[in-house]
Image (cartoon, rainbow, N blue to C red; front, side):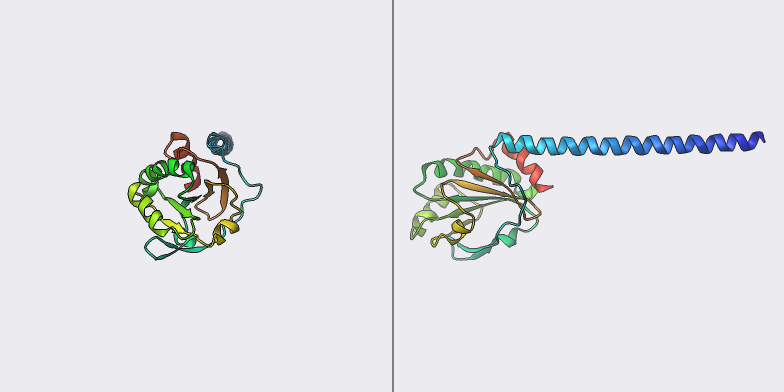
Length: 193
């Protein structure tokens, strides 16, 4: 009878241990998830990102780069993407190009892609000059018909969209940003996940 009670006590203790372990693990998971969501929102707020109510897939497109090669958004599937619309006549656009290049250099190996779409009409030589002057190594695509600009409802420049690694639109940014800032890097670390 004594052995039976000891075995029953051990089984009861084991059930308690499992219950408390499960309770601790689930609470920790919820806490970490809440902190992750909070960090996500804080990084978006710090960069002035407007988040959509519903995350929809980013509209795919195919454009030519300055060398005449076709590039599609779908080529970057699985990567977080900074999709930036700009033009050579846009002064704030020129100011943010160097910080976009620094962001690209810092995070390209972590799954972050930068794509700049020029909406200039018939200025391919000038765009190529900007690529050389600013030493841009990320894809610079040409949208002289402005079809992609219209598909993304771009009204002012510069305008950027943030696309998560899942291919969905995560946010919209109107105006110039310091893309190589700490806040920006934190923002992209949440998009890669």
